[in-house]
Length: 556
Image 1: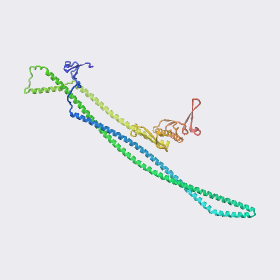
Image 2: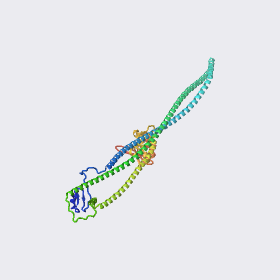
Image 3: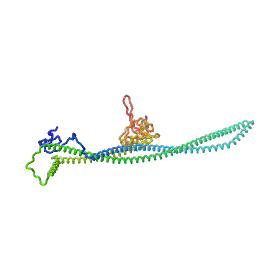
Image 4: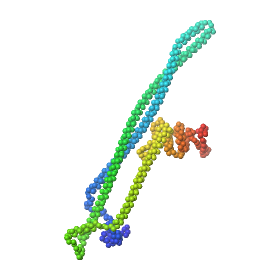
């Protein structure tokens, strides 16, 4: 284990081999072959000490620093908890704001629908008024004709009575031929009378019909006026609700602004507390380091004291050697106490000079060079770390900007295309707008005549239109060379298939579309049709047809 290193019990036992081997003592002294003492280590585990070598003031300061650090950590935890609560409140307020905006859009849409219905009812009312005027004119004409007939009716009845008297006279006359002529005239007059009576009855019937129509028109007019009043009342309620929503939106925006301000203040306070915690932590580490240094010095002084006591005991048991002859001359004027003090001062200087490490200068130069190299590497690493952090921040910023640009463009395309395909309105919604990469993406669609729905709660046709709108929106933002669609019109009705075919025709100007379809509008809108059918056996037959030349002869 030790190789060529010799182990001795004491330093005195190793001195006789000094300069021959590399030696170490059980007390921790390390001797090189060159004769230099390079140090070692002392075991301090089995030493028994009474008392503490660290001043109580330093221990109190270290304990205060620990207590202060604990308070800062607790305060930091509480601030982090408050920050998470504020962030949760901001998220809730953002969600409430989004819902309020959605309700506002719904109210605005309902208000527009009510306005359209009111315009339609106004048009119906104008038609009813024109029809009422026409019927009033016809009623006036019928009443005039009836008055005319009633005026001529007594004259006709008098003429009829005269004709009947003439008939009676003719019947008494033996001239049969003249009687027949008068009979024919009487029949003609009766026929004319019957025609006039029938015309009078028809006029009465028409008059009663006109009166019933007039009453029905008046009733419809009253009902229309009542509906107009209801629509106006609903419009007033919608305006009141819109004002309330605007006030709510303003309050939510103010509350969000206050919460964000408080959150920024908490962030600033948190940064200040973190800096204080780091400073207190640094001071605590310095105090611990000073404590360890003082403990090491105390241990070293204790070991030195133990060694001196052992040497003193050894000297007390050792016989004093005879004084050298001749005795050294003592300077005049020095007493014994002065000589003893000089001896003690020289011994202190001698002990302060030990142990002497002859390789200390060389080791210092090597350590200094190694330290300079490490400092240069540290400076290079710090510069690289700063550059990497800047690049990460730039990449994150560019990533968010690119995503936001793409999202805004695709959202605008989706709104336009969905309004064309589904005759409604829809938009894209992020689950976490403040951090779009932490959440997902929702497709919110509002088909015509239906409430706002998410994609999961739609029918098959509505899902197909919404998905196709999203695909076309992506294509407009970043087109692909070609697209393959497999029976995407299976759940759509005829009108939606026609709109989809027109949309694919428009999009085909920038890309090629391969569509598998069984619907007539889609097939008629294609530039080239390839029919695949099962022939005899297990084989299929492919038929091509140019629809531009044979569009009229196409049969499904």
